[in-house]
Length: 448
Image 1 (spheres, rainbow, N blue to C red):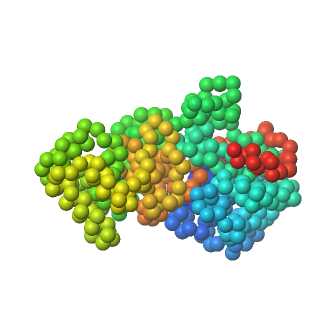
Image 2 (tube, one colour):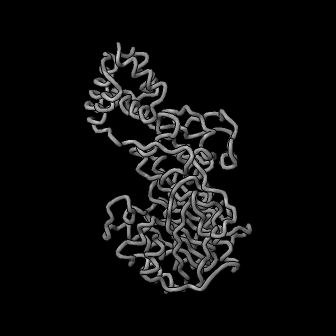
Image 3 (cartoon, rainbow, N blue to C red):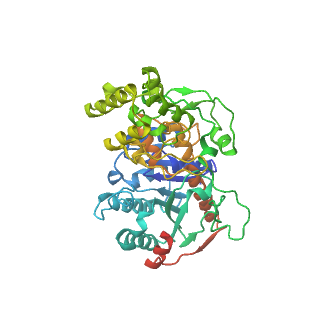
């Protein structure tokens, strides 16, 4: 505990600071943070008063020097947290057991051995559980136990802790006295079934929805190059979650969204045809559409400049506009044309009355899986941040590309806070259990 009476933490592989934000909300002060991605660390520094940060590769950092500069003795630190890069473990991409990123947890253990904190938390994707038939997690837990720590493996679903997103993550945790931490108690129940902590129907509220999270944000978004400009709130908060997200903020930043060509905008519009779509079809079957209507239908001033696009994309766009202006065609013909150009089944519209599916770093390149539930555009950076439970005061640095990548890689702060509260209880010896060896059969159960 620091001289100011706060619990202390070190955050390795910190990214934009989702874990530190959650631990800060629970009363921890982060003394040192490291991440090799400089844009993410710039965001971290903007939002945290951590005394020392570093973007050096963790392999090159001398943990002993850090401890001496912080004026800590071994055992003084309350908790070491970190999420070694998950690409090598992720179930979304090719898993490579020889990927060097899979070995970065060894540097976390190196810091653990140097600082000897009272507790630790390792966060990762669920794919780590089945990596090498469970041997990776088994090796991590064995090494931790050899250092005198307990080792518990939790699989937590962010929906059960107040995050409006389907996001399962693995947390390996433990205490220095060889005991395990008890997992945090869920605050929300997954819709249509009770939470595992709500077996007797204790009346937990159901998981938050996208509507709960972002329905108060303006429909209008800024262009990518304007992502650092601010917008006023145009509506009052409609839910407790929105009130919580607005605390400490009197304006909206990072409310920019990716732009798209008209051919893509039209695909989004046709995903929910209604009265307006019927009127378009009537015009198409007769004399075609005027240029003004075509521009409005394809997104107006918010469209991406065709001069910035590849030649083949410009040609597709011009052909689409020609079809719309000449008439004697139908909506089905337009759909068939777009499908033949490689746009079939590409987009996924979020559902207003459900949590979001898992946000990913790949949003930086392609947001096609994250179409706004009610508006024919992709979600904005700020909307993504809301779905990840970052408060509106949290400012994301660098380009829109980097901002979306930072959010997709982050630990949801509200989930991190729930974990931090469990750590606090464990450190105070109010909740802990004897550590048991982790065997392969246990890992299979945890993955389900």
